[in-house]
Image (cartoon, rainbow, N blue to C red; front, side, top):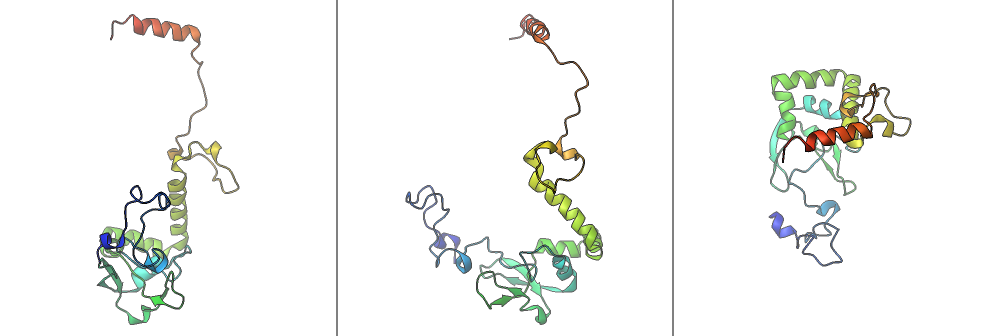
Length: 192
């Protein structure tokens, strides 16, 4: 079915009791197994809520065939039938699925330049974990400002260039006389 068939009024047009809850959903209860997504559905690993090395392991362990998701989107599952029940369903206990990949995931395996990088990370899980943790830290801390704002025991040592560290003051600050002189010069410049 079409996404429009599943959605009610947009949040701003919904009744006041529904505003702030997102789009009202006409399909079942509107969450869990009745969630409306982009159409890409599934999990890459057998334990999608834990950080593991299984994504790269699965990517290289299987050959992949193109299928349609339940919503009709293009995605990929292993050709190996033994993988058909690897992944537990996110909502229905006892239901299982094959792991999935997107075309963008398979590019990591099929493109020679990306394959070299992905294969190195697959063969060196500690290197991958370190690179991932650094990238994740940057992603989740990029807008927090300088390091002195970080709290807790997991704060990394040293400053990182993307934290825009401010160097120590090594010059005199302007005083009221400097400000008055600059103001006089600007006002006397004839600029409008």
